[in-house]
Image 1 (cartoon, rainbow, N blue to C red):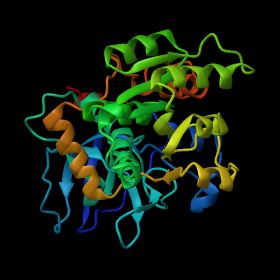
Image 2: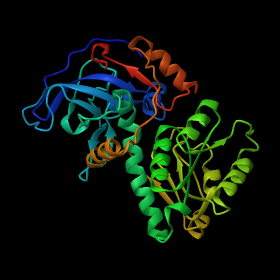
Image 3: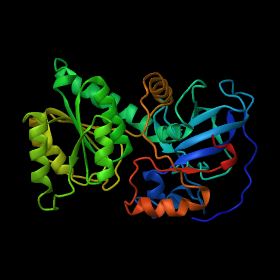
Image 4: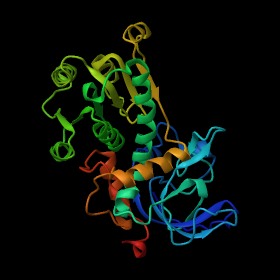
Amino acid sequence: MRLETFTLPPISPDEVLVRPIYGCWEGNMDHALRRSPVDICTLRGEDAVVIGNAGVVRVVEVGENVSTLQPGDDCIVFCNGTWDAHGYPVRILGYDAPGTVGVLAKTTKMHHRQLVPIPKESRASLKQWAAFSLRYVTAWANWRVAYACWKSQMDGSPPKDQFVCAWGGGVALAELSLARAMGCSVAMVTSKASRLALLSELGIDPIDRSGWSDASFEKEFLKAVEAKSGGLGVSIFVDNLGIAYKTALKALARQGVITTSGWKHGATFANSRAMECIGRHIHVHTHYARYEEGVESVRFAHENGWLPPVPEEAYPWDRIPELAEEYAHGRLDSYFPIFTVNEDLLE
């Protein structure tokens, strides 16, 4: 990471000039700094890239074709960088989409469909909306598909009989919160004492793996699943890590769904197609969301209080390298580490 000054070209008729207020550090930023699984500078054919695709920005200027936004509006970043004919993301803003400038810039510009206005009457903090912008939108879109897949085979099963389990970070937490709101039984795996306490506060059954060795992990986890599911297994398993993929498959119930929208610790896995067919397991893979899903998720969050628990303190601009280092080594307690960009715009 290094600090540089650059000049943005004028906005086009469909673009919006914005100043980021808060950002939320997330996995793609860590991938970018580690240049793994891809080197995005090489991929984009650019010498340097300004990363950051989760946050809240304030509108400064709008292009002549933009009618949905006006100067002074606060928006979440909707980080679909380039999209296909159906609106699904192909590349991500502030990551692998060529020419895009992320929220680690004091001023940047975005297409108007890369911004979703925050409801003006929202009582949630801008820090919460910054954390919401990537993880919760991803969770909304992924859960919509995963639950539809479960219902396609188990439409007669009421939510109270469904056990949803996850390991991972903020996206997994967001999906479990949705499942709990629907009436499902939910549980999440972690080893951090602070996260165990947070999960309990949120009504998510914590599974404490801190005492499990690598050798005993699978045995202990499957034992916990058996106890919490009444021996039926996991209806929907949210796995955005890939650290124990085969164990997750073993934990699935018949007709179970394993769903992922990320690949933090693994991008390629093998499985027994025969056993997955016999178990009638459905594998769901999604990548972020369509713009309409972003709008829907913001509306639902505003109306139902489906918002992330964020830390009181945000990392100031000059401590962002420290934040990156803490995240890379797994030393953060919060699922949603927040940093500031333009301090003069803070609440």
